[in-house]
Image (cartoon, rainbow, N blue to C red; front, side, top):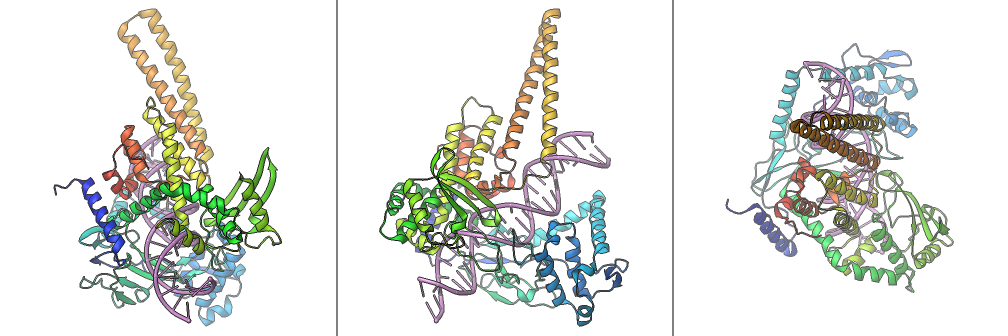
Length: 569
DNA sequence: GGACAGACTTGCAGTCAGAAAA
DNA sequence: TTTTCTGACTGCAAGTCTGTCC
């Protein structure tokens, strides 16, 4: 109890480091929890809500009715207009139908879900219009469930669980042009679920009349429960919240690896540059790929399974994804990138490169079709094996963490001035954050209400300016006419306050405009060493709450506790 | 060395709840 | 007090990377 938080963290991190090196992959000693929380069972539609086929009322059985509601709920979403989505949905739906239903329902275009849709729209409306008391009661029920299922005991500490709910059934919504969009995501039964906890701990009871698929005691993994989803056949896990010690330590380790790269990066860069002139084609490809990963923060680019959206990363780039320009916009040796990356987010960039890189790319593209691999001699496994020889723990993605955190540190150093107000410092921070987001290509759809809220701000600024004019005149009058000290002082104060408010609004607007299609959250949460931020806040007297919200402060508790103002990444 | 499974991190979007405006 | 708006939070898909098997 007398151990200061910071020392507690340091100590446990050091212990972890020692353990980590000699470890057999053990992640915990004891783990006890209450199992996952299942979604509520399907509630049948009331009899007055009717599904029509070919204009005729048709009573669906419970199972097929439930699936129909999944589609009906999504009716005003763009998804349901897509052919692939419709086809997948209809196939899967028919598979779950009874023989009799299948005999009748043969075409999706003849299905009329509109009453079902209206029913759910109405229900949502009703929920919105609930009384305060009803809402409060619902909230309390929820809190009870969180209390019961939302926590576990790991090595004796009560820890928050990240996702303690089993995913409900529904229609799969892939991102981009996913060939499986619209397929039925089936309801998960206790019989599908594997429970992981420690030997001798209280094993969570399965729901009445059910059994778990399996109960295991594997302390080399961190998950509490798992099941296999039916779309891709991949496992899904119930795991701890990012605020947990286990996740925090892992996060810290990640940033330490990135800081290690800082010490080695010069020699690694020299190495890959010399690879550009290697006699071996494989080495040249490795050198150029690594250069892209380092300079452009591209992802590694693993091979993907079929039946997924066509997206690529560095190693999986194809000839069609780049265009070479000997000269473009007054620059020499320009590579134009245009491809869909993770989550089908477009990466578009025109980058001047070294002449040798350019020549190599030309060579890699020779005698290839557009859909051939650009780097046909290498893959991510090979790349990572190589990187690991340069530095323990080094993999392709470490470069993203390293470059992101380095950029933040550099930008903060450049942009923060001591005479700035707190608001200006926050803007500077956001700009540094934004530089990182742009580097990592973290995009978002422009918010639907963007134009509107922008206009609103404009108006506020206009009003404020008018107020300032008025205040100036009044001040002048006060000075000329009355020469009453207290009145003049008062008017001066008013003016000053107004001017400060205007400045604040203008800063707000700049920030908003620049953030229109850039997402800052991802880099803040996953790429920026929180110690940089914590140190900066301490050094420049910016309250940490201005930069990190509650969740973020919880996740980065380790950094907040252990970082001094002189920390440098 | 390639295929595959498994575990864990990263990423966007949609929902929700509380703050701000009316 | 009611309505509107925004940022926090959740959900879950989609990556990365490691280990195992043949």
